[in-house]
Image (cartoon, one colour):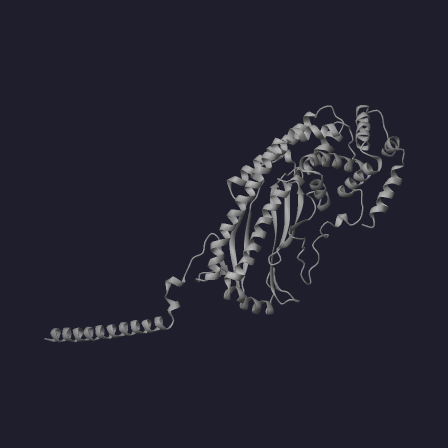
Length: 447
């Protein structure tokens, strides 16, 4: 009897507990429905998105950007396609240049030898230029295998949040312009394009310090390093993987159709400038001129004429021969334009419409100004030594260069003969070399 009573009691309590549970669950469900209707963003999965390739980051909070945002989605959808198009355009341009360079190699080498007074191109001169062609083919194959420049991340800033943050603490490479109150952003980084560690010798490396003002679409790149192209190996080449900041301004939010073109243009300039480095250093008439100059000094002056300590006059003469060789292919105005804008690849170059060191308040200039080496005549510089030889040709006529080359060639054959450069110059022109140099410097000091 007692056991039957206890069973009924347990059954009663279980029944009451089940009713209570149902009530609680029902109440929570109703509360959840009310909350959902009041704030649909908390449970609406349609407002959640995963951005990948490239990643999209909420830059202020340093976490993945996962909110559906029509402006952000425009950037996410368009930037990779723009990168691909720029890659394909530059690849075609480099392929076209290589074909032209390869087809014209025999004429250039033959003409360079003739200008130097040689009967035929020396074997090592031919070998040196063929080495350039071979290296360009290797580089092009590397470029075709995988894009050398890749956008891996987009950093998203909202204007209101960014201005609030900048009022309290700095943000790397973003500022409020003190004069215009506009937001400005820049990219600055190092591209270690080529690197090979050599424990017992100087490392082979080719580095580019790069800076781009994203709103003005101006900037610079500064090449530094040392490479021996006979040892060129694509396994030592490195790609760029970069992060690109976008600032969602109020104007962009309100009228994306009107504002987006400027952002797209800035991105195009940025990515194309990276390829500009590749093209200018390797696949360009400037690069070809530089190669011909190096070959002239090494394979003709040193090997053929035994002129191991090249003077300022000889540096300029080697450049003049290279200019004349290339001038017949690309035209005099184009060759002189290369000289006037910049002679060698190893000086700071501009990005976009003009050079911009992108030095903001409280920052010091990171290097000498763009083309500062042209500010005054200095014959130790290849630019001024080249201008000096052009000056000598204008002064003494077109026979000056062949006469001087012929004399160097004769001296090279007779290794026992020692003749000072000033004496050789006087023998050919009848003038004092130092006096002519002083006159050239005086005439160009006011430029």
